[in-house]
Image (cartoon, rainbow, N blue to C red; front, side, top):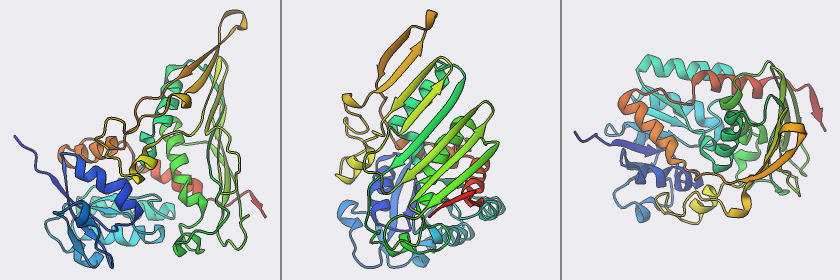
Length: 344
């Protein structure tokens, strides 16, 4: 029996819509890209001839043919548009950050249950090739008991973001709520809820109103995880460094999917998601008599299609969605807590 496709609408068709959503909705056999919101320039039909371009979000939400809506608007509007989409009877795929407070997380997921709809978080970085290799190494047990873990997401962007909402001091703005959800979701998916968190944030770019640096120390049973990101890091350190009682692993941030998508490569292309050979991770393990052995590990293909497959399986077959409500609540509790130290 043929499965009815999930008719999907995107609330925005900027970079997020063009790069991270439309190519996958269009390529996945379980979805139909049916509608987008484009207030001025009408570009979607050039790439996707059958799509309907609405002038406003209200018009799109009133489309009774749509089953799933992707909320990919500015961060401070996520809660409002998610509420409206759920009340309109749509399932929702919600961009990060899913909320700007733990209370919003509770409210939105309660509203989804009340209306019998699925509210699903878009945490695509779980499907990055580099993180998938990290996960493989951790689960293999080759490092022994973990001692210290560091996940970083560094960039050098000294000028302020040209998108005003990115630089306004409103709920959900700043680097912590921009890149923090990626890093925290990866950590939480591996290790669960930390026992204690110490948070440091800072503002260093000229004229900025929002944080452009953060460091989080997460305490787990027997080991610590540091999560850090900055916009003025001229020489980034390895993105993933893990030390255990029997070995160490390090890897640069090397997932190629975003760059490939920006360049217009289809997720269906054979080269999609494949890292170059020189981006291998370095695993050092200690054997008998403390003899060290070093190996280069190549990552498997990264593919955000895995997230859309999970969305499809949840909506059509009721399968558990891998990004769980409690994980998003823990993430938001960490981001919302008061800083122990403010770096000025």
